[in-house]
Length: 423
Image 1: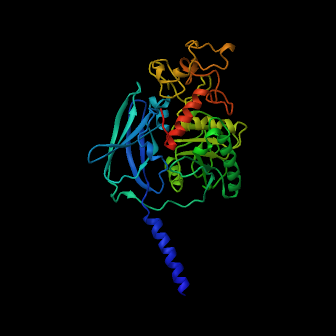
Image 2 (image 1 turned 90 degrees about the horizontal axis):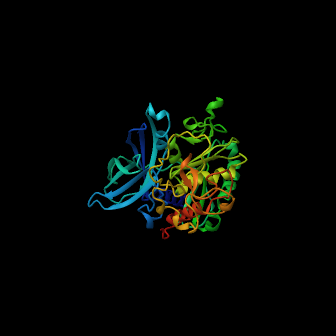
C-alpha cells in the first residue's frame, strides 16, 4: 500500500511540474482579411506554448526579407525586444486576379518568446513600393486570463536527426497529412527519406551540425489529399489541397490554426508538411510553412526547392511556367529576395560575388555557363527581373543544384538560427 501511495505521489508531482512549467512561447493566432488594395488583422486567440526554439542571441531579425514583420516592445519604456519577418498565403492572395474583385480571410499565426511583462506588438506590411507600414497594434499582458494555457494535445514525436539543443539549432518539423493510422510506418520511412534529401543537398550537407529534424504522428481519417479539379476530397488532419488560387499544382493548407496546434507539442523553427500522394505538387512560403507530396518522381527536388522559399526567402527564378499570381514583382523596386534583382539596388545583392570582368546584364550563353552574373528572367517575368546563375534549383527541377548565391543566403540563414554572426 505504501508503494501505491508513493507511486501516486510521484505521478501527481510529475503532472504538477508539467502543468506548472513556465511557457517558453506565446502563439498569436489571428485572421488576415482583405483584397489587393486593403487589409485588416483581427486577433483570434493567444496560446501559451511549451517551446520556443528560436536562438535568443538573435531576437531582432537581421534580414529585411518578407512582406510582413512583427515587432515586440516593452510597454514600460518602448524598448524593442523581438522582431520577426515572414510571408503568408494572404500576400499571395493579394496578387491574384480574384483579389481585384473580392476579399477573403486567412488564418495566420506568429510565435514570440513568452513575455516577462506587458508588451506591445505591432504588425507591419509592405506597400507596393516595398516600404513598411504599420497595420495593427495590440497590447499583451502575460498575466492575462485570456491567454490559453491548456496543455498541448499529445502526439508521439521523434527526433530523427539530433544535432543538439533545440535552442541552438535550426529545428525542422516534418509533419504528415493524408497518412492514416495504418500508414504511420510509411510516414516514418518517407520522413527519413525527406530528411536525407535535405541533409545530402548543398549547402546543408556541410552544415548538418546546425540542424535538428523532428517528426510527429498526426493521423488523418483518409489517405491522400484534396484534388478539387478532379472532384477528389479527403478528410485529412491538416486539410492540404491542390489547386490553391486556381493553380493546379500549388499544394497548400488554409487550415493554419490546425497546423500550428498540432506542431505546438514539439520544438520547431520551420514546418514541412509531407502530403501522402503521388501527384507532383507543393508550395513554400517564407517563415510560414513548406509542403510537398511524398511519392512524385521529383520529390527530392520538390522538398529542397520549396524549403528554399520557406527557409531562405529564395525567390522563384523561372519565368515561363503558369503561376497563380499576377504582377508579383515590380520592376521599379528592388525585390527583397536575396537571389533576385531588378538592378534598382544591386549593391545590396550579390554584386560582391561578381568577377570584375562579368558584364551586367550577363549574356546567357555558353561562355558564361558557370559564371555568377546577372541573367535576365526570373520572378515569373522574362524581362526586368534578373537571377544570379544560368540554372539553379530555384529555376529548374534539378535536385542539389542551388547556385552559389542561393547557397550563401541559405548558410547565412543557418547562422541566424544557431546564433552565429551574420553579415
